[in-house]
Length: 70
Image 1 (cartoon, rainbow, N blue to C red):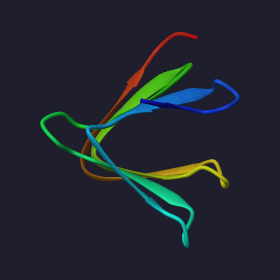
Image 2: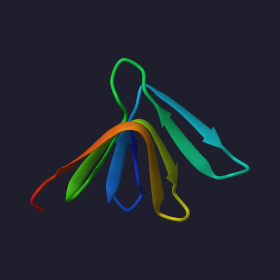
Image 3: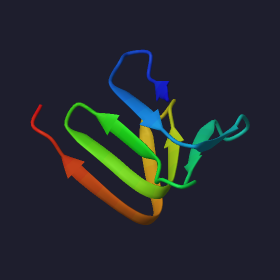
Image 4: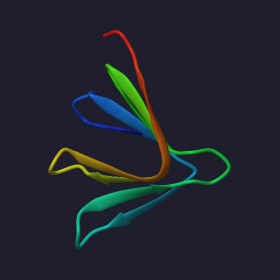
């Protein structure tokens, strides 16, 4: 599990790779899909690519979003 310093989200993944040159964190599927949890939604995908400095997220493969009441 990785939490943002500001507490706005947390990520869960069995496998993760950080690319220092591109400043991106790639969460990879193991037995379970990785997920990103924020106040109003949870995102699941086979691969989640996070760009923390840009506050940007991309998903690849099977993915779904669960919306929650804040």
